[in-house]
Length: 131
Image (cartoon, rainbow, N blue to C red; front, side, top):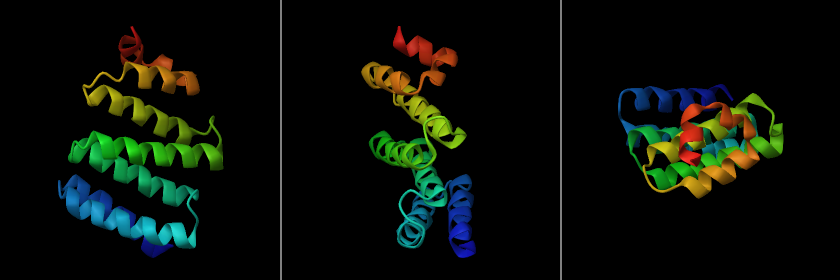
């Protein structure tokens, strides 16, 4: 598992260096192995999927892929850790950030997300998207 953690860390480092394609390569390799060894809902696997979503969102601006990865991580966190766990809440928050950043009309998606994760209403920018 140290090797897998190193692969995730290498992805983070490459992301910071703005080598987004390189970061994705490391994340995707890590996820393939993590899913086999640890399972699809193991927190380490989900963290790598979450990081993949961040790279698509913030680096590549591919909001469709970012949403796919964020939803996959969110579903996994919810199944394995529950809705009230901090990792689940963090992932839901990031999905809300994605909806805001994408600048598309995502008000219906945001409304659905807030119904599922009411803690998001504490963010002023979430509230402005719902008006």
